[in-house]
Length: 288
Image: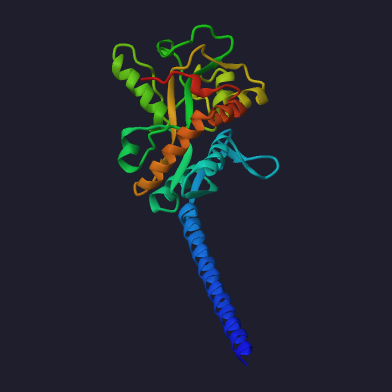
């Protein structure tokens, strides 16, 4: 009888130990799971989806290619930003140039592309990153056999293709005339027409020069139409271009600056520039 009691006591002890070990294991497992969940939340965070806009017919900045896909320099830059941008994912829409600005004004788009320069009017209305994402050279396009035109000074007395009364080219030529009141350029205002029309007019002798940015596919148009048109030896001006943000996107601006700086440092922007312009546009010295 005594042996039976001792055996029952030993069995009870083993049962209690087993139960105690089971509870400890369950608590530790639950604790580890909670810690893992907290760590995942801290490291993953919430990714904010934003819509941005590029122009739908601005080759090589942004356009629809032969396969029906959105393509171009700024499209590649935005896709590269999505690889390194912290806390945001950018969804791209392709719309008309007018619709990009309307969408930015109404809050539909967080930022827009279009090879945009800084100017006082835009800086009052919108937010610019500190880091630029492109470089645009302003060129004088002339007939290839015209050796007289190389600089803005050479446009005095020449027929310069009309420019619209706003934007960078109007401001550039107006500033030149203000600095040279005794020998101004005859600045004609009006509809410039599409790029093909501008270069065709130059080829046909209707105008002597076209002043415009080089980053809008000019060389492809000239080659395709087999026009007697080329650029002066040196650009008139070298400007940084930016994505332009809505005024309330201050956090995005900070993250965007960090992401753009990263893409410059690791050579991604240079590679994209080589792809679309056959040169690293970031090698140009910016005009003061």
